[in-house]
Length: 380
Ligand SMILES: Cc1cc2nc3c(=O)[nH]c(=O)nc-3n(C[C@H](O)[C@H](O)[C@H](O)COP(=O)(O)OP(=O)(O)OC[C@H]3O[C@@H](n4cnc5c(N)ncnc54)[C@H](O)[C@@H]3O)c2cc1C
Image 1 (cartoon, rainbow, N blue to C red):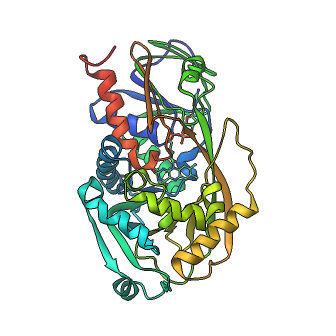
Image 2 (tube, rainbow, N blue to C red):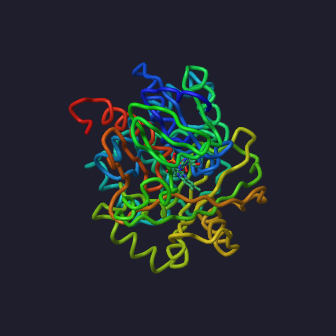
């Protein structure tokens, strides 16, 4: 960037899913948008995740609504940007009566939308390859989607670029004094700025963000070889019902959590709960674990991988195929909120998903940010 700074209606800092979603919402309003990212290509949580867009199990109220809306936008965008939806739906493979009791309480809540109970025999008929000896029943949800994030995020960015959004890669935003946005490679001008930094909360507005008590959560992930059959949907287990707030916060979850604490204390200690999704080549993405620290160590622990595999074996009733890849990812976490939206200065918003659900809620959040920034009644 040389000479006179470029002018934009909106500058978005961060090209993860939250930044791209914000750019999309602004583009849909006909605004001139630039997305600025310090990395040469997507490298954050948005390409390390399962690409699992979950609705059921999200915290009741606003988060569930955000997930419901984001799922609609994913559908629209996937079609337009040629992002394959690799499978839909979710099977929670229930193996304890206490887990079934949680589901039985859920019809009184949003969790019931698109959900039904399959008997173990019905599940076995639908997917004979799953050796469900321990399965009591399957809670089936129809609302979930799965994309391959490491391909979907670059495609989404390329599609936004083809529609007129500008991208500045390898530019670190160092200061924001609207309308001036300073980067490591020169300044630009923007009427509004959305800061979507993921877990990079020690950079822009670090002093202000310090008051929210943010920390990081580290997750271990695995890719396993093609098991030789297609999954009927994404799979989860009892540990998920004990962890996902839409279920875990129900009164009926108390006995399940107590039983899990007794029977699987190590899984709980390492925050292990099972998600299994399948890729186009048949391989499985499997995880995960949750370790919280200001700066988590960057090393994957073998014991944690083994706990994930143990849960895979127990829930699917099949031996896990060989491991093809291992990686870790981190996301921002807050003690008291699932999403942080802050207005550090007039015409600036910060948005950080602090609950590990940005793939599921990002598009709705992007719309909220743009509304907040451009709706005169709301903008500061
Ligand atoms: C292993 C793992 C599995 C997960 N699974 C799921 C899942 O299945 N479903 C789900 O809904 N959620 C999942 N999540 C959570 C989800 O991935 C995150 O909530 C989401 O990706 C956060 O998106 P983001 O855009 O805020 O952050 P990021 O993807 O981290 O992007 C932030 C970007 O901001 C840039 N940036 C920061 N500061 C600056 C600056 N000053 N200048 C320029 N650029 C800057 C960074 O370079 C980065 O590219 C998972 C997370 C992990 C780690």
